[in-house]
Image (cartoon, rainbow, N blue to C red; front, side, top):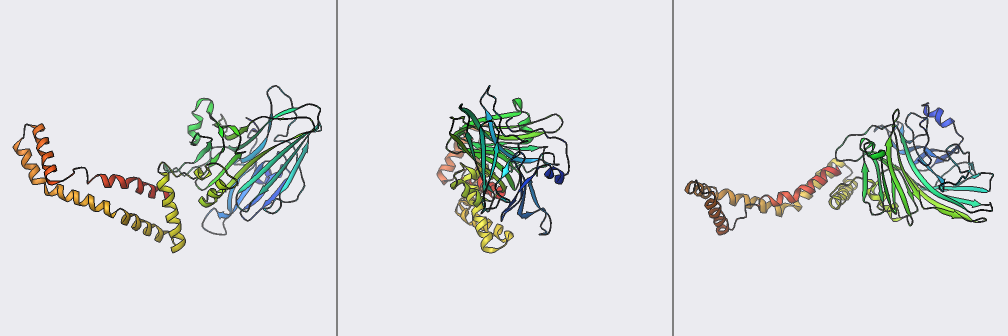
Length: 400
């Protein structure tokens, strides 16, 4: 797999971080660092979220370097065309940074010269939330054209603990072109042929989702790419979501470039919607598992969220939305109750028909239908309103 590295020997997180010079990351939402050895985004904590409700408890550790107890990182790079030998940056490449710290106000450019005519520059910027924008430039100073494939990946070593909710997906995830949302649990992907699933398309993203957090990569949204979700391993399980963009041929004296978006943070609905609009990551709102009834679940979430902000308490918001839903379905419920009441009133006549034609079921059915028609009663009218409500209440349950 492009860019993948062996899990290696497990060390403490601090020892694993110390194995590489680092570029500190400090924003309103993130703290951590990027490894200058390999240029991996592999050390991030979420400033706004803690392990417990105690604000003094440790912040959430999302990404962690290879060699640490729970490696989880994003990597970006290039692979050569088949049969070509090109000295490209990899996991052991030591990059040089032109800044001391990456913040929302100060992007940093990393540089590496392969001493054979190719100069690689990587400009990394980050916003105040959870989106990194990585712009790679390759300058070809040789006398021959070079063909490179940009790639990006998120790798996770070891099977993480999941919450186990049947209505909530945790595992590998992605949207690639018109393929629709792809959700693969860790155990499920291992059982696939070769332990992988592949997709092709223009626009989209791939990565991993936990209950509250996610890490994804998205290549240039205007160009086709090949994506893969994979997992397996004999001693230690390794899972990976990667994207391979189209080949770029860089002529002598020219430069080539590639852009990748890396998301690493909390799955805040409004934030994902914003990233879907700008920079335009296709269907990024689906990083939250809205389920089959997306068209009901999303409005239900927005209603509860609005009521929470209005009332300041989730318990009151849930009570309020339950009342609102009940009121909305009151006309249907009334029809259902009226229909059931009419059916109950007809019970003596129905029993009389059964007694009159005990051995003739066909005649029973005919007389019953005549009775329903005469009394203007629909026997299924009592059930239909109830069935219509089921998706709504299931969506409410899923949102909660």
